[in-house]
Image 1: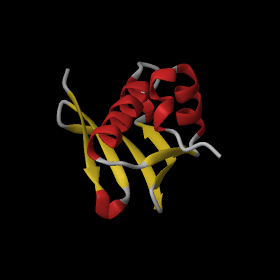
Image 2: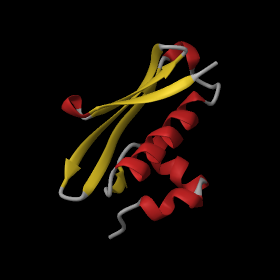
Image 3: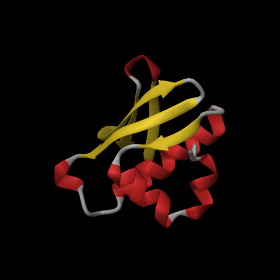
Length: 95
């Protein structure tokens, strides 16, 4: 099984593919130097298998590698994920 995150900047979206088929997405908005992750979604038939966590990690890795944005987690799944993964919390914009 191969997975990949593709960035679609014109749609403010990252898509998550498994074996070449889209199985999830992450929507965001940009505000200054911050990226607000507003929504994540995994195909309902594939939920519960860890794909959501894999997608969030892949998206955050892409943000870390490809941008200088600070992350604002608005999606509850991402908020919870970040709380469980302190190694990614340096990406967060804190007030």
